[in-house]
Amino acid sequence: MQRRLQSRGDPHKHPCLPGRRKPARSPGRTDSHTRRKRLPPDVPRGGSCDSQPALCALRNVACTMLILRLLNVMAPAYFIGLCVVTFALQLFFFLPCMIKDSSGHVLSPAPLMHVAFFLFLVVNVVGNYILVIRNTPEDLRGGTKPDVRQGQNPTGSHYCRLCSRMTLKHDHHCFFTGNCVGNSNMRNFVMFCFYTGCSCFYSMVLGVAYVSALFAVSFANPLTFLRLLPLSIGRFFSGALLSSEMFVILMLYLWFGVGLACAGFCCHQMLLILRGQTRYQVKELCATTETLSAKLEAFEGQLQRNNIRIVWVSEKVEHPVVDRFVEDINLKCLQLCGLSKYFSVKHAHRVPGSMPKAGAAPRAIIAHIFNFRDRDVILQVE
Figure 1 (cartoon, rainbow, N blue to C red):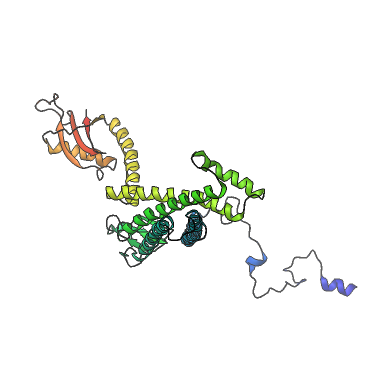
Figure 2: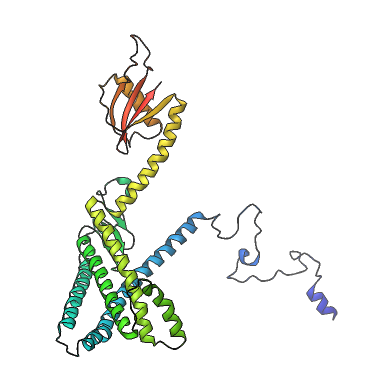
């Protein structure tokens, strides 16, 4: 027993004294593993967004790109599934119902017209969908990300992060085609939206006729279509409605929603085409207008402190150009607030009826005209 106590040593002795051996350190572990360092209370711990904003920004970008890539895969699958389901319903439900109503003859005019018109819509939808994918906008930079600071990008071009290409007249990235819409496939995209909307509305009309014949329901009242879904859900859960019939009713509302979306998008694209603009150009114009409005407010405050007032006029005002010194003063006023690159200098003039006397100071009543939002602005220095 005494030998054991002697071999253990005094537990209160310092471990570095010769009475006790230091424990052997494993070769793979260091001081940072065995001993935990204490940080001061003012030093942030962990990987919080406050201590590492750059890391949080990278995480947000990575999550956003992951969601966009998943959407880029799921949206085409959704569109293809919708086309297959629509074609199956037309072939196995709506067409047999129309043949039955036309005394059972397949070659009667009503089924033939329905088949011909529906095939015309299907061919145009599928054909334009393929052309939108095939006519991919040409990459202007060979897959390399552009440098905005160089200022060498063509007007109307935009870099798409999903496609990793820079396209000319880039409008947007269509997730249903998984492709960018630009100068080369804009016409096919507009026709694709138009025929998709027509197909959805036509399928909805035939579906309404099928439901009306199946349940003996009249859709003369517009509120019948609004009440159809809640009543059908109640009958389905009570067991009075089959799954196939409930599926057809759900497809009616899906066709209605997709048709409205395609029609609205087609009208929006046609409006942009008539204006000669793309969606990114409209966004840049709105952002520039907001920036100019903010700078103009700061500009007005700076001018008021320098005894300069602004007079807005709606018509063009023509006046002769006066001293170069006057123009320099007005240019310095614009450069003071960083607005000289946004406004084009037209001419400076003295306000009529307040001509300075001979030998007067240059700070007599002068004015400067520039253009802002299609209006002439007169700055009067008093």
